[in-house]
Length: 190
Image (cartoon, rainbow, N blue to C red; front, side, top):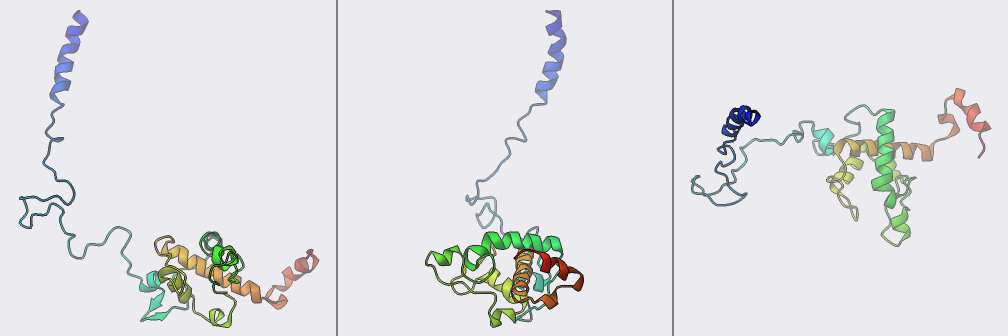
């Protein structure tokens, strides 16, 4: 029993720290009315000029693919091998079902009877600036919907870079291969 008496002051001290003042603060349910504010709204309007974290898009070319309303013809950041791998991965997920893995516009969706997708190997798209591909992924074009909500802006640039790789590989000749690598190609089985 004396053991319980020694614990009693500690218990009383601990219970006095358990006040409910912080838990019972006045609050409002979202969009509920209130008499506290003059406009009777509990949800306060966003302060003018507020930008959500991660949405400060100062670099117009990077987030729209355009400068002064014209498609850009350069990538807004350096494209590395890792970026191309990521672009290939995203392309195979989002683009290949319609455009096919080689970009000829004959993907599985098209083979199932849906509208023909664009081939990246036409003269018009071979000459198109890279900003065009970014813009189409962002805003959609024809039967293609916008992928802005599904694919992050930098991944759209990576996909555009991979499309350029597909275009180059489709039209490449042996002269495009460095001379020290040609022997390995000629020895490889077809």
